[in-house]
Length: 141
Image 1 (cartoon, one colour):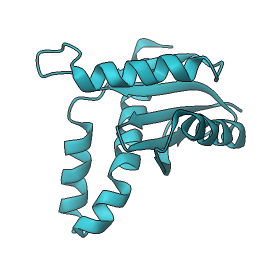
Image 2 (cartoon, one colour):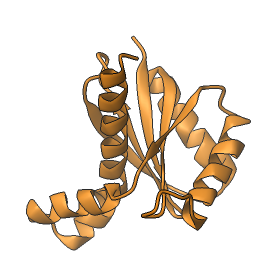
Image 3 (cartoon, helix red, strand yellow):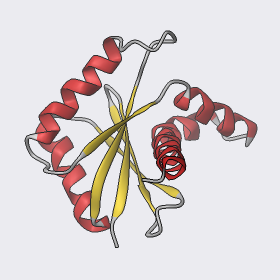
């Protein structure tokens, strides 16, 4: 069975989540500490191989008005470079508020600040992937 991988691409880290085999739920896998493009790509390739990923869904940060800002452009640039090394379809999912929603969930769960920093990107990737799966399920894809 195939899986979908969700990414929350940031300047310093990449949060990674994968779907379950039935593509109903998303689980956080890891947070990749970004060092350089080659290492980032190699880490993603390992996860793709281990989980037999066939589609990548990346969060696309947008401004409140729906336009793509500076951070969104950085994500798009990274994805273009990634596509040269990873031959999988890449879908984009609006990620406005995913990090703040994830942070609120962790605060509500009384998770300490240091631990929140460790898991926030992974949890944001779960939110991105879950939103994508729910949206495409509703469309009948």
